[in-house]
Image (cartoon, rainbow, N blue to C red; front, side, top):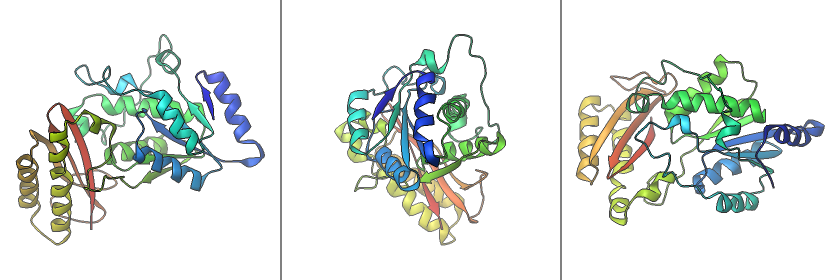
Length: 279
């Protein structure tokens, strides 16, 4: 596996990978890889000839009081995992390569980024959309793969790619979960053993609520019960829990397909997100 840190070398390497009509799948990550990330790589191997993984902890998607400095960074371990998965190339630029001096352009996907995590983390999705657009231009993949755990992010990236005419397919990979249902996340490493045990209340409440909504239960009553169950399970607060159109992310008053139940909750200093399909 090649590990590349400058754009000129990256472009030469990508051109070599694409010789003879070969296809490239891109899996963008911020590192601290877990089985969820590796499931994206495995999907990439199924749909393309070569897989390129990027590792870049993107400062522009972190707010001033968020965990950019503390975000886990384990590049050597991550690289070893990617070698085992047959990844062709690891793109690992530093901040100065990704955002050279004078960088002053950003992308805003206005409507899709305004609610949910966008409301709680102002500017977050501008940073995501900008760095992903740069990765698309740098790697020039035929397909890019993102996890469905951050459903709002996936919807924003799909809209951005469509609006800006990126010539690639964007695939969503199913959420990878621990056996007790908790969605895999690099931020799970922040949880104490007691918090990790309590965290199972989050997916459990969402799963129950999604089933109830699909069966015609009142939306407001169902979401109120789910929020109460999450807090009773040991969480400090629920940032939001909403029934949304799966494509437009519009909040729904009653269930209609395709729909997604979206939520974010805080336990200790850790903020977790999750979602479930409804129906």
